[in-house]
Amino acid sequence: MNGKRSLRQVLARQWIAFALALATAFAAMALLLLFILEDEFIDDRLSGVAGGIVRLESARLPERFALHALSQAPDGLARPMQGRRPGAIDEFRLADGRYVHVLLGRSPAGEDYLLVYDVSDQLRVNQALAGAWPWLLAMAVALAFLAWLLSRWLVARIARRARGLIEHIGGSPDPESLQAFAEREKIEEFSQLALWAADSWKARLHALAVERETLAFLGHELRTPLQSARTSLALLQDDRDNEEAWRRLLRAQNRLLRASHSVLWLGSDAEPPADARCAAGPLLAGLVDEFATLARARGQTLAVDAPEGLQWALPEEVAETVVANGLLNAIQHGGPGRISIEATTAGLMMQNPRAPSSGPPGPSGFGLGLLLSERLLARFGWTLSRTETQEGVRLSLASPP
Image (tube, rainbow, N blue to C red):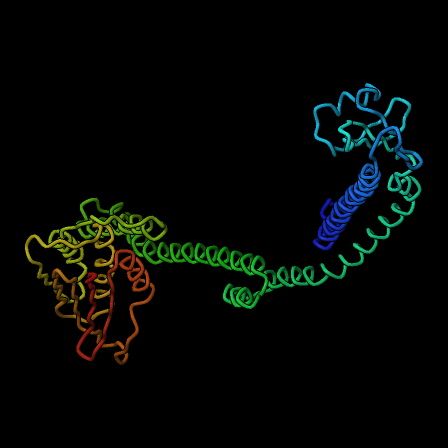
């Protein structure tokens, strides 16, 4: 047993406790009202008898009434009543166990007196309670049973809605379906719970998507430089003076560094720095120097046009990763000829000829690298677009307006 209880059980017990507490409160109020009414009837009787008293020595009193001049009244009654206004009434429990109501009166002749009414046998409420408690207990049991029956009827609908909510949360195919259910749900708390579940589900899916993209980026960016580094090291094992191997190893190292920096941006939810800046000219010059040898081997030339002092609102590692990715794609998948790179304050324009063996021009990009570059740039409000025509391919990076 796990000690857990169903919602129906919890609501039923709370409903029974509420019904019994409410019934007890009403019973106490009714009992208090009966005592007040009983006292009012007794005091009215006492006041009526006092109204007929003219002279103390000739007063005619009903049974269980007694009349005392204030100066001759028992000390236990006279002392509490002294100093009070005529007509005042009080209640006393005498030493012999009798319960009396006492009225302080004044006759027309100016005599102060105490009119005592022994009501020991007039307390009907107490007498009724002494004989009615078994019936009251039976009524409490019947009320509890009725409350239990009503609770089953009242909480059945809520329990069904709660089970339906659990089933929808567990069986929804996607967060959008759960959100649609939350909008249809009429009970606000259930609707809010479904929305929280949908938001939590979306956050988890987003985290998984970021993780997949990061792994895809690593697979995309690290495969080629690692293979190049292994090949270059193998060549350097045989010939330590192999300049081409050194250059290839250097390019692989640079690409690994760029990939590691970009992974930090892809996997982070932190807000990008508002003051990020990088010098476009030196960055492009370094990349051209890095890829010049590879471009010459494929019959290509690299031409860069960047105004002196031009700066982009991007971290250097992000700008370097995106431009290097586009440049490497232009070299590896483009045809021989001139690859032009034009940098402006609005962004960057890169154009390269199409490879002779490529298919008809179309809107398709250069695969995973394009998606990862778009995601990197989007963190900073930049956009990336690629167009392909019969003459060549154009890659555009645009800064935010």
